[in-house]
Image (tube, rainbow, N blue to C red; front, side):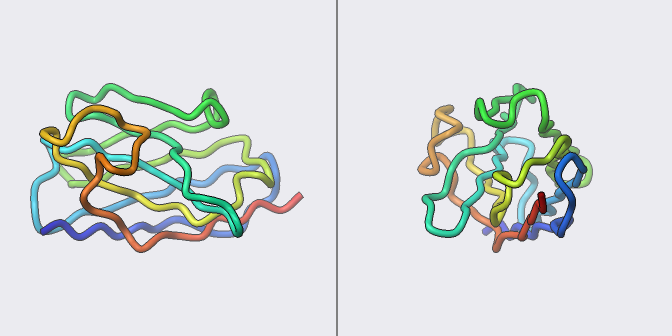
Length: 125
């Protein structure tokens, strides 16, 4: 079993920055893809970013150039640096982990077997 705990959410003004962290326990994640998804009120959960076991990165078009995903395998942690935040980035952000054997379609939630509880990000205009 893998437990994921997100932190770093909060309230920020448009144009500001936040850094989300997701710490894992229960298993070493070096062979896992790690992803960030978000869900705004009344909307479906959507893909934000992912980083593979080989450290290749993937981003939704809506966040390219503004968000950066990274991982620290020694700390079993994945990060999401969010810059130039917009009100439309407001959502609950979830981290997820998926074993490499489940495939490489990183934007698809089905690749991920483990999910955190989420952290709220609110961007005011």
